[in-house]
Length: 261
Image 1: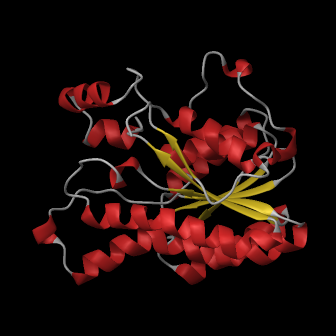
Image 2: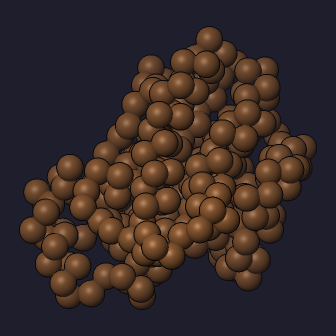
């Protein structure tokens, strides 16, 4: 959870105050920042993750900052019934969900020759399948509320020259197509569906596992803006898409990558 030194200079969104948001994969990385920033806007936030320790710590940390305490539920998004149950629990406790952030993913590198059928299916389940079923679960409550915002997380990896991520990249490319079809399916209910495509974001996981001097050099050479990208940069776009300020924006992929693509 990153507080920018000039955080007060960034936008506030009155329409998010009191709104219920649900974030998958919210305990660490990008999801952690999404939870914290939504709560800072006064939203009631529920989030799920498999990392129970990190999830509980984040909920307590947000509350300690004087913001609405998020509801954390330990859930594996590949277990669709458990995910659906968590969405039902969250709406029962916090109110109808009108902001859904489909964020959970796993970008562990695996060589093409090492992927079997079970590994392929697991990668699709953790990276894209849950997006559809979460959207399906929130649609009735968003319809009843007169609308809502669904934000799916894509990835720059589907557009650049990364290797050893064939399942992840396939899933992330699919999310862009899923976004467009769900926007058409849900539009009559006042539900907007958008996709954020982040660049290479400096989360602790990336810094610990995959970003070294060579990778930093590659990023600086590829981006128009010679600065590293952090979770807060992506979260500020998410807030705008979740809020009513973007009320006529749907079926789009929004890139925040420092000008790489």
